[in-house]
Amino acid sequence: MIPRWRLWLGGALLVAVIGAALYFPALRRQVNVAKQLTEKTAEQARRELLPPAPASSGDPRVKAKMYWGSKSEEGPLMPVTVELALSSDPALRAKQVLNTLLAGPVAPEARTLPADAALLAFYLLPDGTGVADFSESMSTSIPSGIQSEQMAVDSITRTLEANVPQVRRLKILIHGQEMDTLAGHLDLTQTFLVNSNGLGAQSAKPSGASILTAPIHRAVESMKSVTKR
Amino acid sequence: MALGFAAGSGRSSTARPQSPSTAQGAASSTSGGQTTIPNPTQANIPPSQPRMGLNIVVLDPAHGGADLGARGTEGIRESEVILEFSSRLKQALEAQGFQVLTTRDGNDNPSFDDRSARANAQRGAIFITLHIASTGLVGTVRTYVMPELPSFTNTTGLIPWDRAQAPFVGLSRKLGDLVQQELARRFRGSPATATVAPVRQLRTTAAPAIAVEISSVAVQQRGELDRMVPGVADAVAHGVVVFRPSYILPIVSSTGGGGEP
Image (cartoon, rainbow over the protein chains, first blue to last red):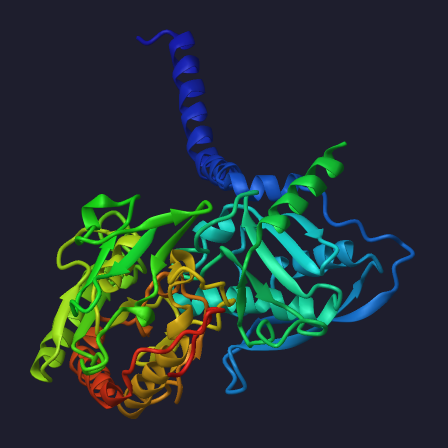
């Protein structure tokens, strides 16, 4: 005859096994959720850590034009009006509109820039040259090709042109460095035309570019050192 | 870095200090920290000798090696598929009497400068870099040409390597438009004229130069791209034939720049 204590032990073990079997799917779901959270890229994590361009409560809310992708016959980019609190300081304003552009449109297929790319810094030089420093994802996550890289740059320059008239040209850096290309095709050693007002005829070409000159490098470096102080 | 053209030899000579493997028997120089190349438009050709005609087409299948380029479904890799476009275009151009050189035939990946040097070492050449896009309307093709480049001071007969395309922008646009017109006829939805974009590969090329980009690796099946191969080859070859009479090396003023001859 089986001792009573063994029956109780067996019953308790059976209850424990059934309980574990019932709890297992819920546990699995929790593990998956935790895994998804930890799978964020380093770029995404850094993006979250970066302080957003501050929007002062005094900044007026204005209608800003964002150039996102379009499948219409009018062109690959289409302006979308968004109401934003924008600073009157042109460098800060440029940061605000570029961060909005990076955050992306409501429709993901209209996105022109990689979802995990971040704007690390934006400088505006006295001659109207804006210097936008993007994270590495801007280069590594963008679809390969002349067309996709040109659309990304055009969406940036046209958005700046529409919202920050003080920016005349744009120099793009990746993680603080001048790169040969954006993602293997589009030349980043040059500046891109943003706003032709006050520029010579040669620079006033659509999708044009001009060679970056050494003084721009020096100006950027000096502005960085000023910022760090 | 400098590119030189042997006077009156009908063939250029190029040497690029950073890449001696690609030197093809020419001289290069570095002046004031800037790499320069002798201006091909100022070669010392005797007046009795006829002007240079278009004889050579340099084809550049993009990417290669570890750089796969655009990648699509079913394992489609731009670096592999583009070799088929290049091979077929080579045949079409040779059938028209052109000598065709390629920057790569296998799975290697020359640098931008090495690819440009292949064209810069020739006289009477044009350069066509071939790409397949990740995006764009499937079944369409776009031709790209460089925007105007800043002028340069040209007192030594040298042009900066980094702006080697400057004197040829006008001719490149003409070539690009002619090729794109042919492509637009064969591939509906393609633009009617060439698109201006600062494509890195074109900037250091001292010859009429265009980039042709096919859309795209996003096809459902590889066969859709394969079916475009003959049409792209015929269109580009026909565009080059139509361009041939326009090929006259541009005269560059002492202040540099370039444009139409």
